[in-house]
Amino acid sequence: MITENHCIQLDQNDALATLRQQFALPPDTIYLDGNSLGAQPRAALDHAQHIIHQEWGTDLIKSWNTAGWFNRPLSIGNELAPLIGAQADEVAVTDSTSVNLFKAAAAALHLQRNTPAHAQRRIIVTERSNFPTDIYILEGLSHFLNDGYELRLVDQPADLHSAIDQDVALVVLTHVNYRTGYMFDMVELTAHCQAQGALVVWDLCHSAGAVPVDLHAANADFAIGCTYKYLNAGPGAPAFIWVPKKHQPHFTQPLTGWWAHQSPFEMQTNFKGAPDIRAALCGTQPIISLSLVSSGLAVFKQTTMAQIRTKSLALTDLFIQLVEERCADHPLQLETPREHAHRGSHVSFAHPHGYAIVQALIEHGVIGDYREPHIMRFGFTPLYTSFHEVWQAVDILKDILDHQKYDLNLEKNAVT
Ligand SMILES: *Cc1c(COP(=O)(O)O)cnc(C)c1O
Image 1 (tube, rainbow, N blue to C red):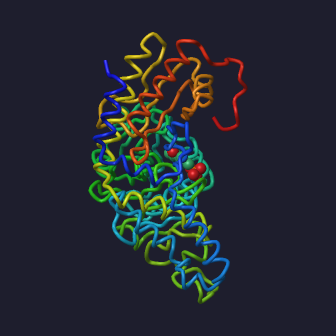
Image 2: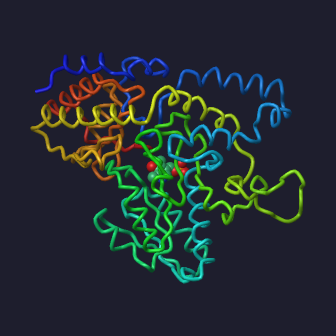
Image 3: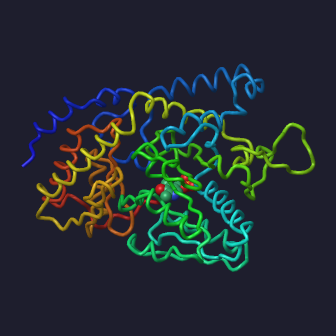
């Protein structure tokens, strides 16, 4: 049996423990929801003040040049690149994940239509259990193209191989599943897609800053992802899109706003797309929230994804083991793979009263969240989650379960 002292010891030997001080976390709160909204890096406050006071308040419109506002989607993209195995000038931080998926998917279909051997392909593969916006965007794009595109929704990871055949134009996969935390083998699946002649877009929402990602090693085609989850960029901060150099010369997407033009300030009548990553942009960006993405990324520069991964697996292993040891009398079902190679950085347990239990946990200072159906989700963010907190969270969970300290008559909130 694992003891509380053992967990305290783990913190004493934790090389990342000091990074926690760089985050503004409220007292008496165990925050296990960094997979949904990352905590606030303390530096973000001064940074925001600088942007509002100096860049906006004092320097006004000059800041487009003097502060580098105009180039900021790309300069911050370059800061993010090493975390996902991208090279310089391949990442733009811009728009939302949903919008970036629309752009990447449309660009990929366009490439396929211009490849004679693939031009007739009309199947788009994704998972039925993918995050709904990903499916909705692909549905919307298919309807809009009105040219016979069909979604092929796959039910089990094991069925993906046979579903990706030579009729498939595009595959859109979320690397780490938002509900179960299941992680795909990116290298192996990308190779399979390409062997079948399909292009692949990887959604890295639950991967960027959570698990090591090497898009170039996988030879992937496109990627997109959030910054407000594990990258701690702030609520609704702009997302990212990766277009590798190999696809940049032929990359076109339908949201051809002026920021994607080769020379926007020539104010030409006709659109001429930029020959580089700028082609993934559309229009003017929310400079304040965009800028704060940097404050989140700054913390990652003090460690490595390998160190983060080691601690992440230790945290999730500990949580699974403690729940199974200490809450064994309750109908909890582990939804997350035990196998490290297939686990992201959150752990999900299903329980028939999952929603009510999560609300009770929140009332007792343990913040996780709930996803239909029945799933209680707990995110572990190595930059600021401690091993002792894992112990405490399970202690509180056990108390709530043992004494049924939850209310089955709660109305669900708009955000669960
Ligand atoms: C969080 C998440 C999104 C969010 O998309 P938004 O456009 O930011 O609302 C999309 N896809 C996946 C897989 C996610 O986990």
